[in-house]
Length: 204
Picture 1 (cartoon, rainbow, N blue to C red):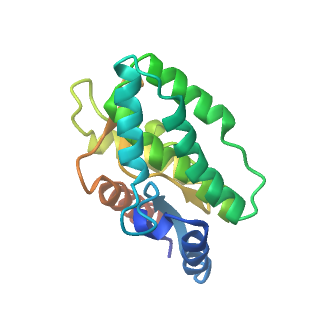
Picture 2 (cartoon, rainbow, N blue to C red):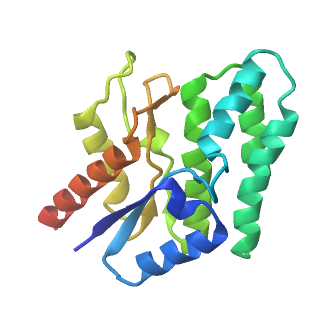
């Protein structure tokens, strides 16, 4: 049996939390697919990465200097990466994010980057395949979720993979623009993967 496990922001807020999650995942071989959220609060008064991304994006969209804000977000991830002793750099990803912020890629794009980046870190930490949700979670041009198409695309991507990390919360429209779910979107992504696991198990 293949299982999907989903972890919220507070459980992935630091390197210490990542290690706890890693032990949970690796403790049972059937836990094959992981749906991570963006890093949450590390302590009372801390700021969630998603909120930091929103603030950073709105500054960029308003033509304000957002360099300091994006450096703070990058520092959050580097703190996790360093704490896990990973040989991983997100420099290119942050360069792309900064450029897209300047070009006003949209608040959905901004919000999704927390999961996107945390998925990369999680996949690297576990040694799992990383799948960008924008490639497998489908919306139509009006932002309506396409369950059947997602079913088809996600099933095809997962069928030959023993392990994978697929971030929660977002997907993409036909033109490639990022679309986020409402609150609880990571749970929806996890649910979709669970359905795919059931499909694949019955097909084998």
